[in-house]
Length: 243
Image 1 (tube, rainbow, N blue to C red):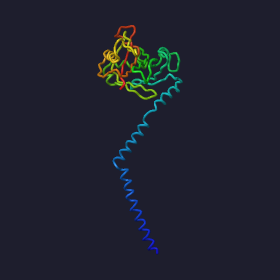
Image 2: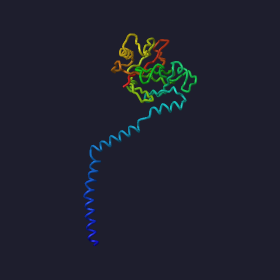
Image 3: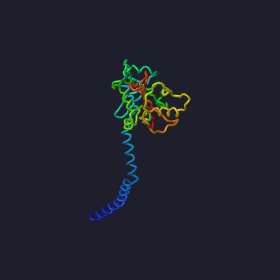
Image 4: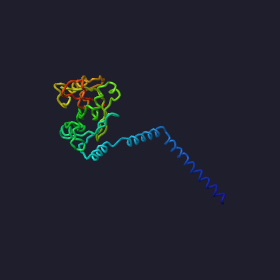
């Protein structure tokens, strides 16, 4: 009797194995197929990218909370050179003589032109103080007048709650009398493209870059203390195109 049950049990096990083995082989072949491996690799890359991508809105909100200042709108960066919080209020006077804490301070703070809209403006203007002693952050942008410096540091980044924008510097110069670069809509009879080409031609350093009527640009402005240029009013300007 035991022998009979043993034979029956073996037959059942054999039947199960005949069904199970092909199934397991199919599963193994599926999960090890090139398409599946490729799909899994892509999924891993997506998950890693999501994990690595900063939450820019959270970054800006944390800065607003840390400094108790709702005027904070972003950060301007030149890697290893400059990193400054950017503010914006309803005029271009307040942050000339107030710091990020709203304290009166002759050194002011970096701020975006009150007329600018980060989302819509094709030309963004950021202002910051400089000094003849090289102590204030924005004095560093005067180095763009040097060809090697521009070659080694071609990009400026602007971070806001929506992301991180990259700009390529194409012009760096000192202005003493022609201030139409601050205009956002009218450019003295020039088209927008012609206006940008004009800013490009003023540069101390030649840089090949394509400009058109849809180009978005960032302009950094600070005071110039270059003794080689004799003028009562002079500003260092750095102009970069969003890429």
